[in-house]
Image (cartoon, rainbow, N blue to C red; front, side, top):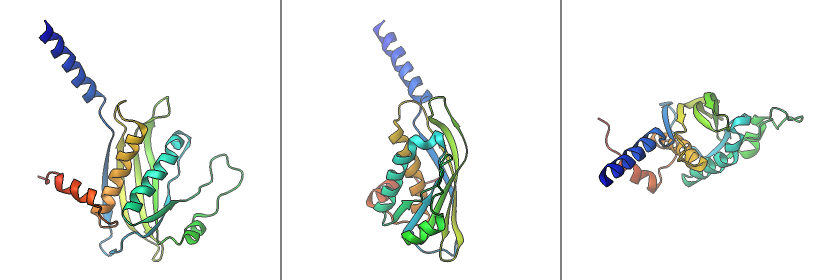
Length: 191
C-alpha cells in the first residue's frame, strides 16, 4: 500500500512539473553578412504597455547587465507613456546624447496576459540598426512562453534576456563570456 501511495505521489509530481513547465524562449535571427562590427554603445528602445510595466525595471537591469558583461555599454531610451502630458526627448536625440553606435528596437507584436497581469506567452520582433550607416544589420523573432507557476518573474526574465543575448553572441555581435563558452561546450551538437 505504501508503494502505491509513493508511486501516486511521484506520478502527481511528474504531472505537475510537466504541466507547469518552466519559462522558455526561442530566438531565430538573421545578421547582415556585410556587418562585421561588435556592439559597443547601444540604445535600447522597448515600448511597454501597462500589462508589461511590472517587468520594466527587472528587464532593464538584466539586459543592460548581460550586455555589460560582454563589453557593451547600453541604456534604455525614455519613451512617452500613454498618459504622459509631456513628450520624451526624441529617440534620435537620446541616441546622439548617449553617443550610441547602434540601436536595438524590441517590439511586442502579440501575446497573452492573464487576469493577474502575468505574461503567458509573447512574440517579439527585435532589430538592430547601425546608426552611422542607418541600416538594419540584425533582426530576430522571439517567441516566449512563461510556463507554469514555478518560475519567479526574475527567472522568467532571465530566460527571455538569456536567449536574446545568446542569439547576439552566436551571431557575433557581442563577445562571448567564459560562461557562454562553457554553456556552448555543454550543449549537445545539432543532429
